[in-house]
Length: 222
Image 1: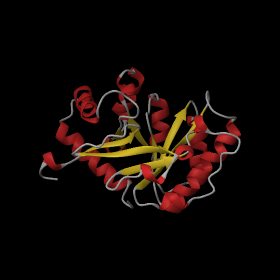
Image 2 (image 1 turned 90 degrees about the vertical axis):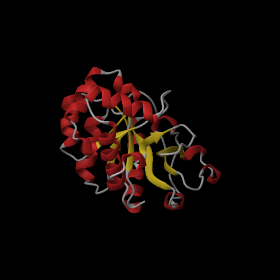
Image 3 (image 1 turned 30 degrees about the vertical axis):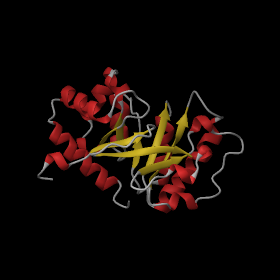
């Protein structure tokens, strides 16, 4: 890592289809609309069932697709208090993803809307060895401390830049537990790196090096 210019930017969760030089992007795919043709050589993907799009028949029966080497993460999956089917069904599907994450030794990308306490409880019950990454994190410092004590990773998007509580949360998170993502936002990953460096008085070379190291550690089985 002596030559900073050769360290790629990491975009841990993106709904954008474009690829860029010097960017490692984890493209999000949704199982309910998945086709093998969406997977392109040389790209990385996450695959899962988003809680918003679950229906009564939602079930993961064919798990073989998750074995593909281009799919390096399971999800996004998770729990949403305000949108999606009843909570018990969301939790059932969430736990299916957890089992796949465990079986495949791949990290879990988590969608969480006002369900931190329940996600923490499930984590403590199951004690997974695979990294759990809270994408689009906008939690407050108190929640953040609880999650830090249980080894979660935190991925920040442009939404967090507009939230004072999220900025305060970022300040207490060690950089070795941080990722940055474009999600569905309008800004590219380079802009987000620059904004985080400006807010937290970091050198771009430092942030690039740390997030690249985080990626290699969390996704070491890719």
